[in-house]
Every structure is written in C-alpha cells, then in structure tokens.
Length: 300
Image (cartoon, rainbow, N blue to C red; front, side):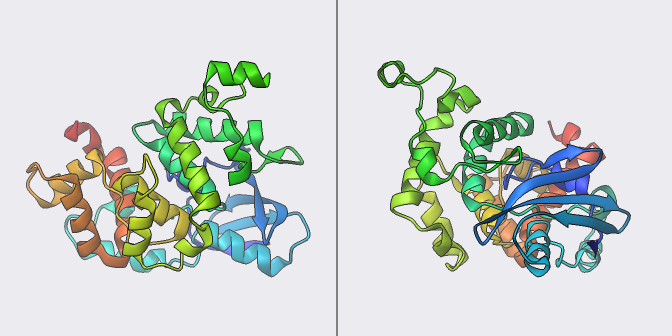
C-alpha cells in the first residue's frame, strides 16, 4: 500500500518522543507489532520520497490498518499549513528548515507511553528507549519475534529489586524491573501500573478535557507536569500540551524573553496560550531546531 504524506520517517522515529521506542529498523524499513482492536499485526513502513510504502500482516482489514498507521504517524496533520503558521513569526520561521517532515509519533499503546514517559525523566533518549525495549523482550508477548509491551496485569507481577523477595520466589536477579536500568523510577512505574489497572481507566482519559486529564495524570506518583504533558500529548493526542523542562525553558527564554530566567511552569503556560492547538508541534520543533541549528550548544 502506498500512502502520500510528507514525512521524515527517520527523524520522527529517533526524535525522542516518549510514545514508544523507535520501531525496528532494517535497511531503512521500520517495523513493529501493533494491535488493532486486539488483533496483532506487524506494521512495516518505508520512506519513498513524499510517499510511505506500507505493509501489514494479520486478520485486519486494509481500512483498519490504514487508519491505525495514519494515527500513529499523524499523517492527516497538514504539515504545509503548519509551516505557513511558523513562517508568520520571526521566532519560529526558521524551524521548518531544520525539521522538515518531522511529525508527532503517537503511542500505539497508551500504557507503554505512560511507562516510557516516566522512564524518560532525567534520562537520555538512548537509555530510556533501551529500558523500554528491554521490558518488551522480558515480559511482552512474542508474535513472530516482535514483542508487545507488557499490559498492566503483567506489569503488576514484575519484581522490583527486593533481594529477599527475589530469593523467596526463586526469580532470577535479572528478572526484575531495575535490571532494565530504570533506577529510582521502578516503584513509580509499578505504582502507575497498579493505578491504571485498579483505579483509573485508560480509555476515559482521552474523553476528558485537557485540564481534567492533566490533573488526573498528576495523581500518579513520580509524574510531574512535564511527564504528564508528554503522556497527554504522545499517548492521548492532546495537541495543546506543551511539555516543558529546563531545555524548553532556555529555548523559550532565548526566543521570547531576552534570555531572562523564568520558571518552567510559566513557560508551559506561555506555550499553551501562545500556540494553542499547535503547542505540541511547536514544542517538538523548538527542541529539534535547537539541537540541529547549534542553539542548544549556545544555551548550555
């Protein structure tokens, strides 16, 4: 199947969006296991100029597969219109040159996004993506050598790092959550799993208003405003979210506030008010513009 859509698949995959790790790359062809209405399917996408070559397996219809892949890669989003929007502002007009084809990379599994986002806190892209991939290989279901992310029930049974607990159970020391390199985040991930299996229904979040969803996600231990906004943006499609950390603070301060020291929460509020429904995309482009243009080095 051929899909016409301007996209840079490689940049979108490796951009560090906390929906999921990059898909498996073999000769510039990206593949992963995707569930469509509980049916497992292997999706494969390859860049072909302004087109995507798309193939899939499994007992799903062509229309189901097409709608799912378009949702994951946000292929219905009008990039040209967004670039025209950026061009209207001196602070933003150069960003599309450095990030052409970059799209939001939405979660195929919201729970995977929640754990990925918690794992990403104070962590490098390389480390958190490896940790999440390790979880899939250790505890996910295997479909033709592609692995699902463990569901909340499976996750609740994963051991943390209690030596006595492991000895009593006979579980290998490498079969615990900290063996995946998540460090102090392990109990937060476990608690998040318990909350979303027992107290909070994942399917309800996308039906909430942004403010209601934000406050609900903040109730999860270990989740602050930045992680909450990552979860809402990449996991549930709240485009008005503007995930803000020290780097976004420095970039926004440089572009809009003459380098003045402003609080991260004020940056978040500014981004949401200034950019509206484009906030999530502007944040994504700001970060990668700063990385590619050399601005990041200037702001260190």
